[in-house]
Length: 180
Image (tube, rainbow, N blue to C red):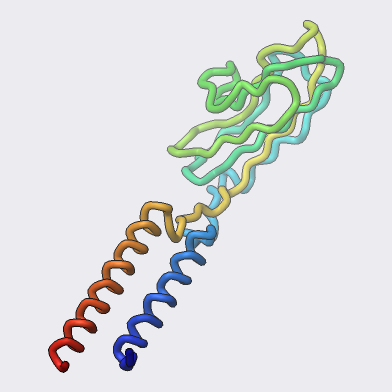
């Protein structure tokens, strides 16, 4: 069996396409943007960390917060053994934008529409009168990523390559029979 140049080129193309599909399925992604710019209100958001807070404590700031602003709330326990703290849009603790965060940890909230104010509200502490330490900050959201390939697109690509290869082989053998 003698292989002709068109068949070799087709086989090489199939191998290259298969490797490209396998490499893209490994997880690389394209950033849809380098970052989502924070609003000027977010850039100037400055609520200093607070220690010794009890239930009902609140702090925040008014401003024209916009989509892409991301708030990060960090809570550590002082004398409290447990707590409940929320990211809120008003000093009364309502509306709750994210949370509550129970105990120590970090909570984030990504603004998806215009907001007039953002802060925190300590809902409860255990025992009553126990204290917590809270900090909240605003920054631009991290870039979003768009996956290069999904398992479904990889499977469809593989099927298309197999079909193309089968078509080329059938055409090759039919051309050889016509010559013989």
